[in-house]
Length: 265
Image 1 (cartoon, one colour):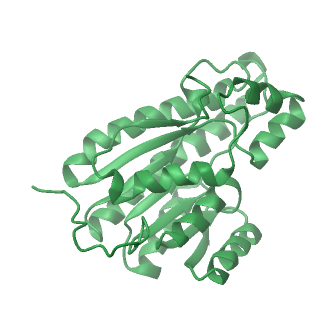
Image 2 (image 1 turned 90 degrees about the vertical axis):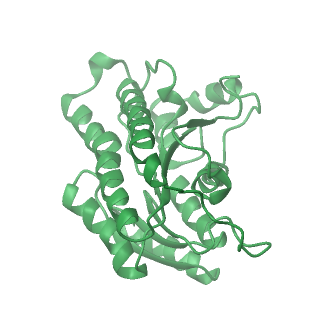
Image 3 (image 1 turned 60 degrees about the horizontal axis):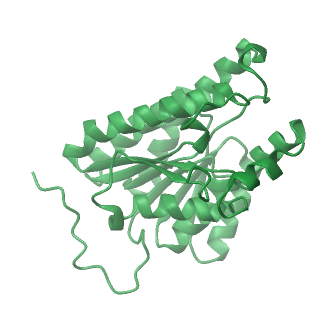
């Protein structure tokens, strides 16, 4: 079976994701919102998913005002039925699913492992690990049923690649997500479905601001570790996801790509 993408008829100057339908979780703000704007500029029809309708509506209207094709659906990653319904909505709206960016995540208050509350552990597991697993399962089924081949990118973290004493449960769930990514790549690669992850370093989002509020000085400390001596803009992370989802990355699967400004160089 030859699953090599045929890009021979792509017009010169066409966007990275032209002609594709993209599903994005956590799309109401931060990296997910940046991805929605970018993917639409690159030619995709996008479906934004998150819990907060006001944020989703604002980003969707922004994409449409810029000439893109977008819609949104409320989705709680901790709720299996909600996740499946959100993925199904992409097929209802656009008739197919080609690519997905599983970006949505949550965080616990920073602190050592013995101070993590059991309820917080259960919640971060439900959203950051079980949620992407549910999403990937639904996305693979949707791609199989419509586009036939496609790509999925999971948003992990550079904090998953090393010990993470300040955010131990967050790092653990993201490391487990790396494993799911690699296993999915092996499982679905023969069908022409690529699965990768990105591992962002510190990025200017509400999440890192919440960490800074709890641990003043953390942004300055993380910036000092970066070879570029700065944190990332959300769009810089979205650019990496867009490339991995595009046919330009047609021979890339099973990778966890650090996008960390050289923090681990």
